[in-house]
Image (cartoon, rainbow, N blue to C red):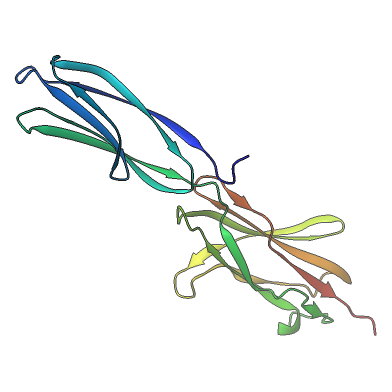
Length: 196
């Protein structure tokens, strides 16, 4: 069992040189040569391949460089990103355990929806959503957008619990990054209690 994913890439390159009758190919990962092929007799190297194993999340550059004995060279690269980790989520509002006894739309029963979401590898957040639930199921959904001023993902219209019956409610946060990694582990419990 591996703690990190092991992804293997099969890279194939083709090289030929009809002038100097000599071609070399080197393949590298993030600047470090992994494999090198030397051909002293053929003008056409044909298809040359190598396997690259990417054992950790991160950004990688795979490169193939071919050159002849005259020093002429040609190079091509591809960028590969490995990301298996869901975005990190910190709920700023509402505060877990918040309670209200209000029956009107005052600030006592009004909550803003605000969350900090970061993605260490890709850095691109695809979606952030809030869902209000209780024991009966889903009561409301809220879509959050990024506020560049505050640095939070927010729903611009705060929601109010004054119209809801007494009981326990939960706000769930659902986030995904651009590769589909999902975090649904963050939530806050809210209470409506009007009984002395």
